[in-house]
Image 1 (cartoon, rainbow, N blue to C red):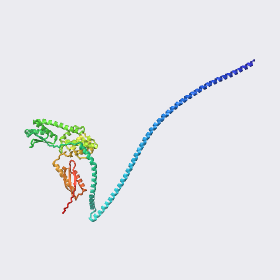
Image 2 (cartoon, rainbow, N blue to C red; image 1 turned 180 degrees about the horizontal axis):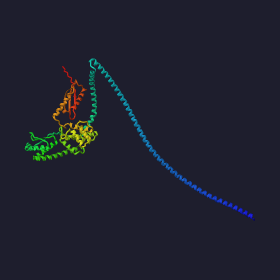
Image 3 (cartoon, rainbow, N blue to C red; image 1 turned 45 degrees about the vertical axis):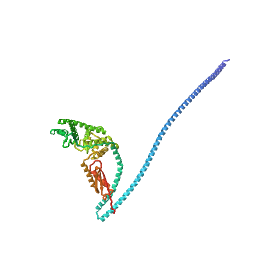
Image 4 (cartoon, helix red, strand yellow; image 1 turned 135 degrees about the vertical axis):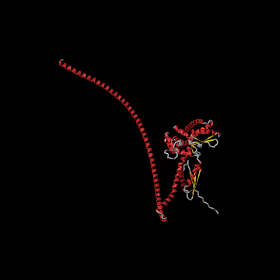
Length: 520
């Protein structure tokens, strides 16, 4: 075998070996590829499985979230529906209210239209009457000028007198109708308030006199009180400031003094001396001083008792003492302190019925006459003195107003001032509250009858019921039934202007027509 052949063989062997290696390599690579493909497929399958699992989880989560969102949305929708429903209800109510208001407005407009029509009719009627009246007046003017040869001024006066006479009856009828209506409306309410106030406080007040009399056990005691050469009586008068009147009255000594407190001290001093039996200047001086302390304490106790009884709260000690001093003060026989307490209670009850401050009203009623406690020591009326004391001790404005206006000298600025004035009149005017001197009583009766007789058309006048009523008999040929009310009103006005009296006075006008004939 030659070299060339060996080379070819080698080449062929190399080619065959290369092919075999290539084929083997291709097989190995293909096998690797197949393995890779399998792994890749496994990875893909696993990834798909994982993705599917994740997809399912996410889908579940998404569905759950969608469900939750739906629940929340349903809740929100329900709340909004509820709000909308409330708004719809409110709108419906407003619409109904507006509709009712519209109906009311329509009714009001209709009523206004009707009233306008009535007013127009009345206006036309008035204008027609005025036109007729003017024409009648013109005719009367012409006739008067033609017949009586009056001047125009004289004719005008005659016509005015006639018109006044004709209109007076109509005016009186109109006033009487309005008064009856007002009495029906106001009288019932006023009676209820006053009756309730009086019912809640009813108390007897004993009429007292200002004369102090000391009863003696025997006439011998008179000489002992006078003393040797009158030294005992002079000592008593000098220490107490009270005059002792020892006259022929058996077994009695009269004490005369302007100050009721001093008179009380003198009375108690003499009573103590009579009981003790030792009557001489030194003993008198000792008893007077002791009695003065006792009376002063009694005064304070009476003031404290009045404040506690009325429940008006804390008060300055000086005012308390002044209240106690009023126990010894009387007005027309009525004890001033009891009158003030009664006025306090009545004022408080009236204030409650009208919705005012009860405590202030009671305090004003208690202090309304406080000036009477020292009106014999200070200049001015008890009202002026009371105002000064109230301002001095910083009392409430309503209290000061009540003090200044309770007698009607000035107009009341507060409701409490009016109530205190009413309570004061009620306390003073009730039967048995005050006594009156015979002279003043007769004088008032005479004045009532004189005032009544001074009115034109009155024939007779009689004051009855202790001056609480005046009955008037008029001439029937001069006063008709309509004019009797004018006569009553005129008498009432003159009584209010000319007389000062407690309580009220009733005016009764009587018109009587008698017809007689004789059968034969």
